[in-house]
Image (tube, rainbow, N blue to C red; front, side, top):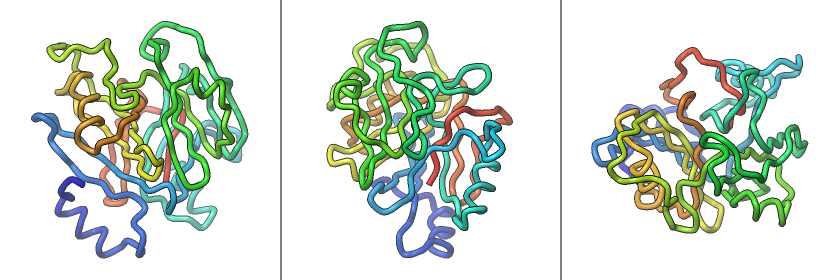
Length: 242
């Protein structure tokens, strides 16, 4: 576990229940500022949000928080969790509250989503995993939440082969890594100083998550309990929240 940010630690100590929903740290990986939030799916209500009761796409953290509070819950963490189209509809599989809203896409395509192998972040009772898309298509597990995205930075501890250590392609990126037993989900956002090779090695080597999924690189937003908000005024598609 990385050293917890001092201000955040104080706020968590003052406000958190006995079980902390999300523990966020600010590691600098090879000089690249990052935020990493670890969630235990066995102890938290980890789920996806996309459309509100009015049928409109939520798109913003504040609307997700309003929905949670209407259910008598206090939001602790949120991150954009998958690619979306211009109208913010999900690209690829999207399952919310056990209902499949958009279908799984298994064929190769353009952009990062279509750069195989890609994968699915799935949440089941008591665990979270990142299976490869074609494997997911075979087993079709019962999921409470699932969001397909592309690509897979780490697959069973092996880095995606398409990304070079000396690449000059630097952007803000975010994604999630999971442990072998599914009891740890680590959500990460990396500042624009880092390339994709650093991003994928972080998942493999720092939190030691052998499977990881890339969410996005143009709309990468994060909000946690301490009030830190990485929302640049851009509407989002799928949002993962605790």
